[in-house]
Length: 260
Image (tube, rainbow, N blue to C red):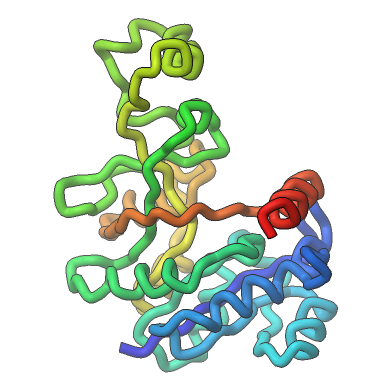
């Protein structure tokens, strides 16, 4: 199977305009994402899908490949689908343009998932180690069946621990309860937002209207589940660090400086 990584990179981010071009350790974020993606053994190429001439020019300047796409796309999925429509590949991997520490092993893992012919899409999950993340709506939780196919994604804590959580206050006290009693954190898993798609699935999905659950949770992957597509998951032990705001970039810069 042939596979390609496509990185959606939009200039006009609401919270952080021009984010892909901002430097991290002296190198633009988009270049970190691109070069890490190039190290994946199972990807046959990497392309940046952008709506911005400056991003296009910057990618070309460091030797990368980039395509200009329509500025009117609602989502990154729509943006990468525009590029994928012109490519003759079996698998498309969506790597977010604000994940400068993406690991090539993670890309290889989502490509491998689609060796299971029952899977329309592949993605990764990680066990939650910090109880604060269970309650954080920006951390997407996921539940799955015994064969690792996703059942549901939510910004809420799922599964709901009925016997332990009698009311909302007990959920909110989870972090302090664990810290004070040295109890183990219950098994919760967060979704890591990297996807592999069969090309025809990606093109079909991008052509569908947003669904009710997708609109309520603001999670694109729910569109796939609501239309009966099967998303197979694999656990990863790698952490990712997305950059959504200038403060995120500043924290990541300090973290890298401390660890180097």
